[in-house]
Length: 174
Length: 174
DNA sequence: GATGAAATAGCTACAGA
DNA sequence: TCTGTAGCTATTTCATC
Image 1 (cartoon, rainbow over the protein chains, first blue to last red):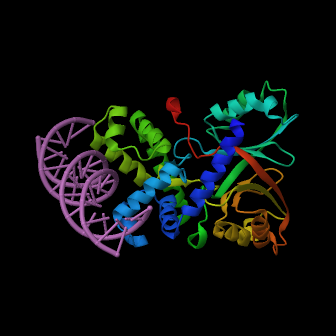
Image 2: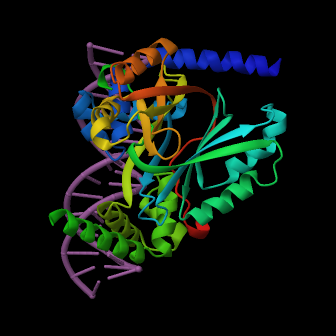
Image 3: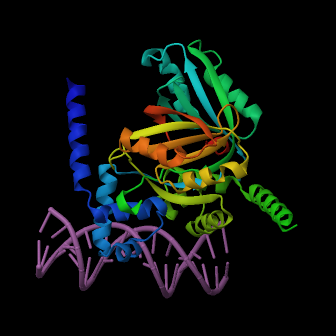
């Protein structure tokens, strides 16, 4: 019952939030998701609003969760991690209970940058960063080694990266 | 010849940069890649350095490319794009010349958040955001529809996301 | 790398539409 | 309720040691 009420509340919040975003908000968001170092004054004159108005809107977007995080994106290669790998994980049973431990290990593993629970042949898709293939092997051993619910995993090495980001297309300003 | 010199230069830069990063830099980077809103004063006292020292290091990390970008990460669901899809693209020929047009379309398509060129069965792995399945279908038509070098593509819908980011593990502070 | 001054950005209060 | 003006606080930035 509590979970049900929570879900209703979440839906309501999302609905009310989505409806409250106007063209100014979208313009501000699009600037910030490209370059979060833009000053409020600069944003203000680009979207034709005053600096405090921009400030208030940004604060509201942060509070409401539309802005999930403000982060620096680092160059993994320059930091000694030139390898990116993608891993499809196939389970025997994909019931949450059976894979809870695996999920926890994945969440706790810093080298795993992304993990999606997916439909289709595989159950998880991971994006992993590593310094060397030996390190990656050790990682797979830690994650999958003793888990008899993992049927198999298929690794692909990323030879290159055409694009990488979490940029969300925003209406006409996408 | 020019390309060769460029590659040598790049290698030299990377080497010199990698070697010049000390524990302070790594500590600063790890703070920034988690929360880029941290003030220099705050960072300074956390890493036991003065604020201007932190400021100089950050500037240097920006200039050298270790800090690739400073961005706001938005909630796609709250912005009307609740769907995330992963797409494996299989080509007939993976020679760059034959896939140049496809690469260009992928780069130009805002809904494609990430695209990795990978080894193994598939040639590309895409992470895509979409508002509806109809939109996604239209996207695949735009990207792959008239490209006879695309043998097939395999879509998986992301049912959930255990983690998502580009956080790079940094030594002992990972 | 630290200190301190100047410039700039961010934040709050208030008035008006 | 939201915008814009004004003014204050805090942060960033730069010159000097």
